[in-house]
Length: 275
Image 1 (cartoon, rainbow, N blue to C red):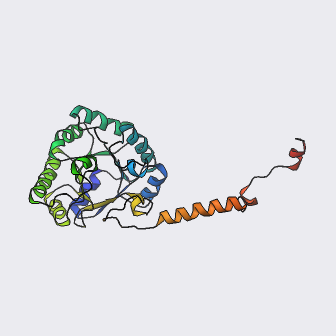
Image 2: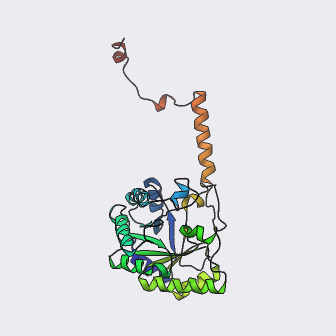
Image 3: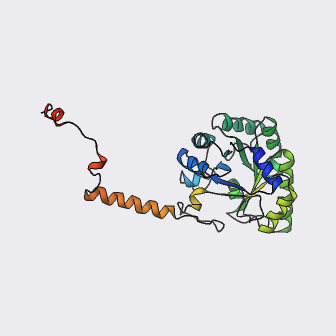
């Protein structure tokens, strides 16, 4: 059965944990979907994982539509959330609604996600009023990495913690159906989770959140450029892939692949007529 925003609300009410993973292509989305994961996030982290950028700043709406549509074709059950990339919603409420609409119509999203607190509440409200579900994102917001001065834990001081809590309540009031908390101290994330009626999805925010999200390439050991402290590698798929690639390279070069069983036959009579 297709997961929806109602699934998120019911999980919060029942105290059931939610699971979310990123995906950026059809094949990966299909595997994640078949595993029972509740939601797939087409994150702008595709800038790092798929496109090789140092950050998410360069990702475009067209990038998100391209990858989002591929994921949507593979996800029959999971709720598909597509990130709104940098400067696709900060410029104005109008731009936010238009670009969110494109992600829904062309990217086939079930919901969109955007970063920021009170300052983007007008955008959240307008998008929700347009019939588009919005997931908020607080704490370490990668699109603001230049303003933060790097990838740093957020909300550690009294003022910063107070702002995070107030922002969480504000995005809930604006209509967000869930909020991602990234790189937030565990006790603060737990407090925010207890204060909110909508579910919190943690990434580097501890077990007190209502759910968890990870970049699939991180948890499978496929992305080695940088591994955050909060990542647990559930498999070393990257090493398995490299070993398989190397074995293929060796087999082709030594002549052991392809074998007869990997080829197609043709009648000798046909070949004789070609001479």
